[in-house]
Image 1 (tube, rainbow, N blue to C red):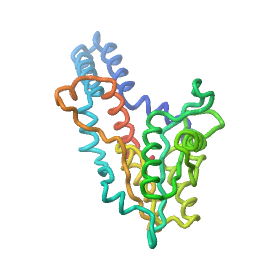
Image 2 (image 1 turned 90 degrees about the vertical axis):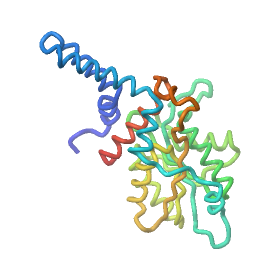
Image 3 (image 1 turned 180 degrees about the vertical axis):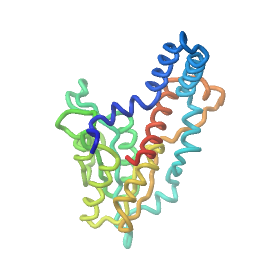
Image 4 (image 1 turned 180 degrees about the horizontal axis):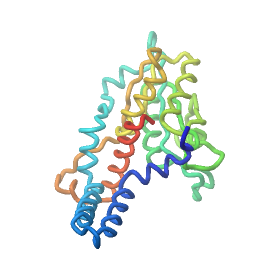
Length: 262
C-alpha cells in the first residue's frame, strides 16, 4: 500500500468541506493581487459552498439524489423478521460509529451520539423480533486506547438495557472491515440473514460491503435509522445551522467512501 491507512482520517478531513473550502478561500485571497478576478471568484464560490455546507436542504438532496438509501423498516417488515419455527436463522447487526476513549462522568469509555442512536434501535429491533444482537466496531484509524467500541457497546447494553450482545466484533477499523470480520463470525454460527442497522446515509456503503463479504450465502436486510427529514418550514432548511453542517458532512463522507470503495 502506497499510503499508511492511518492517514485516512486526516486526508478525508482535508478533502471534505469545510477544510477544502477554507483552503480555496485562502488561495483566492493569495490570488487577489495577481489575478483578482480569479481570486475573487474563488472566494465567492467557496463562501457560497460554505453556506450550502451548513444547510439541511443540502443534506436532504445528497441523501435523496446521490446516496439513495432504502427506507426504514415498516411495521410489517419488522413483524416478518420475528423469530419462529422455520424462520431463517437471523442476527441483528449494529455497526459502530465511534467511541470516546474516556467519558469522565462515567469513568470509562462511551459511545458517540451516532453510535448510541444505532445501538438503541438495534436493541429495540432485537427485542421486538426476538433475534440475537451483534455489534461490530474496533478502534478506528484515528482513535487510540485498548478498549474497543464493541466492548464499550457490550457494557452499555448490559448496564442500560439489561440485556447482552450475542456477538462482538472488536478488531475492525472501518466499514469494510466490519463486514469482512463479522460475516465469517456469523456464518460459523449458522446465521443466514443479517438485519443491518446503521444510519441511512451510511447504509448504501454498508450494504455494499456486507453483500461483498457475504456473497450468496447470506441475505442482508437494511434497517436504516435517522434519515434526513424536511423541516415544517422549508425555508429554514436553507438557513445555515449546526445540524445542517453535521448532516452534510456525514453525507459527503459517505459519498467519498462510495467513490473510493472504502
